[in-house]
Image (cartoon, rainbow, N blue to C red; front, side, top):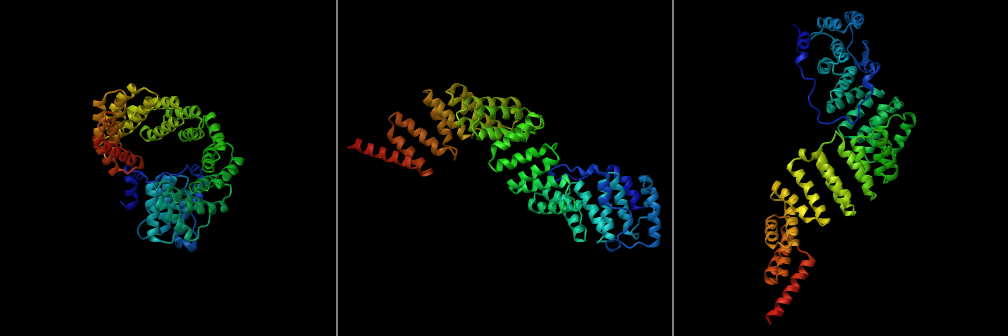
Length: 456
C-alpha cells in the first residue's frame, strides 16, 4: 500500500488541527466563494519558471486528471497510483489541492509540504499551503508560507490579504496594515481587506483614520452594522463620546449590539455622569447569555465604585444586586469577595451598617486575610459602640502588610478616645515607621507635647 492510500485510510482518525494560540480578528467571507479557492490553490496547469518542469508523460497524466475533476474520489484514486517519491512535485500539489477542495485541511497541508520538499521554489505550493494554514489558524506558519510565495513573485490581492489576516491574528498590526494596503491595490473593492485594514489601524490607535475608513465602507455597505461598533471604538479614542453613543444606540435599538457594545455604551454614560443610563446599559449587558461572570465582575465592581463616587448610590446598589443575581453562584471566591466588599461599602455609605456587617463577615470567611474587609468591620463595630469587636478586627488587620499602617492608626484613635495617650503614641509611631505621613507625624508631635506638659 503506497503512502497516499495509507494517508487516506488514516484520515478519519486524524484530529483536524491543534487549538490556536491566537484568535482570528474577524470572519473572512471569501471562504464561501469557490472561485476564490480555485484561483488561490491554482489551476491544473504549469508555470515553468517557478514550478517543476513537466515531461510529456506528466502532461498526459494531467490531461487525464482534468477529465476526472468532476469526480474527486476517482481523481484521488488515480493520483494514488501515480504519486511516489520519484514522481513530479506537481502531482503532490494536485493531491493537496484535491484534499483542500474536499475540506480535508490537515492532509492538504501535508501534501503541500511533500510537494515543497521535492521542489522548494514551487510558488503555487507555497501559496496554497499558506491558505490552508490560515484556515487551520496556524498563523505563524501561514505568514512564512505566504511571505515565501510573495518572495517568489506572487503579486495579487488574496495573497497579501491573507498575509495581513494572519499578521493581524498574531497582533502584528503595523505589518498587517502594510499587507492590507498592498491587497487593496490589487483588489480595491474587497470588503474583507477593508475590514482588516480598519482593525489594523484601530489597533495602532490611529483612530481618526479608522473612523474615516468606516465611513467609506458604510457608504457602499450600509448593512455592515459591525462597522458602527468599530467606528464607536475610534470615536471613543478620539474623545467624541456623543458620536460613539449615537453609533452604539443604533446597534442596541436595532438588536444588533454585541455584549461589548452594550458595555462600552455603559462606560460612556458612566464617564459623562449619567448614572441612570449607565445602569440601564450595564443591566442589559449582564443579562446577556454570552457573559463570563468571573471576567466581568472586576469591571462591574469598578463601575459600582465610580457610581458611588458620583453619589449615584441607588444605581450602584441596583447594579451590584443584578450582578449577584446573574453571576454570584458562578463566581470563584476571589471574585465573589470583591463584589461583596463593594456592596458592603455601599451599604455603609447609605448608613446601613447592620446590613453591611454580615456581608463583610462572608468576605472574611472567604478570605481571612482580606485586610480591607477587616478594616470595614472594625469601623462598623467602632461606630456601633462595640470596642471589643472593633479592636479585635483592627488587630487582625495589623497582621496584614497592606492594612497594618491604617489599622494601627484606628487603634490609636480608639486609645485617644479612651484617654490612653501613651498607648496611642506608640501605635502612631509604629504606623509612621511603616508609612510616613505628615498628618500622622504632626499628631505624634502634638501628643508628645501634651504628654510632656502633663509630666511637669
